[in-house]
Image (cartoon, rainbow, N blue to C red; front, side):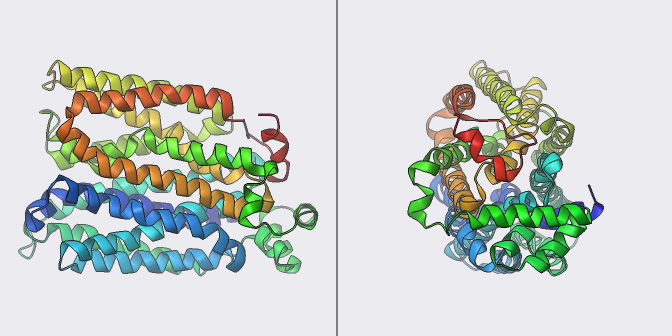
Length: 446
């Protein structure tokens, strides 16, 4: 694989870094936002969930717009929305203004979570598609970690202009730096060659394929994609849910949704609320940084596994690990065993279990299971399901934690995780090493 392919995939994946940063940075800001705006549990849930709610339209329409205008143009729009959201969140004068800017940031996140996997899957050679697709998740977890570190440094800084009333502003506005970098780098990457072929720009497509494959292979790729596109008409939404594609679209939608129902983001969005209830491991913000480090380490460990073991084995093992960890966490709260490091260890194992299984497979899988004909729209639908589930989790968790208590709350997520074993066993089909043009043959057998 050529280094050029890696470089352009990294740039596309930077949208994921901002995705991770913007969704997780709120964890550290909540402690200061709550007294500043006098927030109740429902309002806390709304501020956190505003980004996830914004992701719903962002994800739903990004694929169709990318099919019409191109992957690169839409990613540039995404970077501009990130900048607006970061600046606006930092200067928000009211609770509702903050919710609106968080929503705008969510639109950008939803777009990025759809566009980056599509782009990477369309430039990646089949034998490396899993590892390159994982760059999206690696960028997300890096963004999460950077947001936790940024929050910690802002609070620990000794500058006189920083105080409890404005810590949250600098935390949220810090995203403007990576957002500007993302915008600049996007100007340097090419358009997706598969999209160019779909627009009859085969000369430009062959040139880009030539930077990814050998000269002979580049022409073969152009011919392969052109033949695939020529055999299909442009899909309408009704075609996406036609009998031919309905099964794979529903599988993708449910798969992306249950990835959020693992409960992973209750840890990243509400880490301080959880860590305030346990009594080991240093400050709350420092413990939060540790969760980000664990997340990053286990994401890196998954790189050699996804194209070696395949997607399905990783998903099955992850569901079991996460389910057992959630039940263990529930038991620790039930018996009030919160004074030992086993609590932190359980949380770290849970995060590691997600990071090297569902976390890395999610964005790879939703971008590769759909045929070329419907990939843009179908990926949007799947990611739409992901963000609907994310919004539900974000809105309900602080209320569940307050009303039901941690024992019942974590038990619910334990049941969900173990139940996912049944879904994966029955409906998830293996895509390891399969060319995108051949994927339709796989889901027809499910």
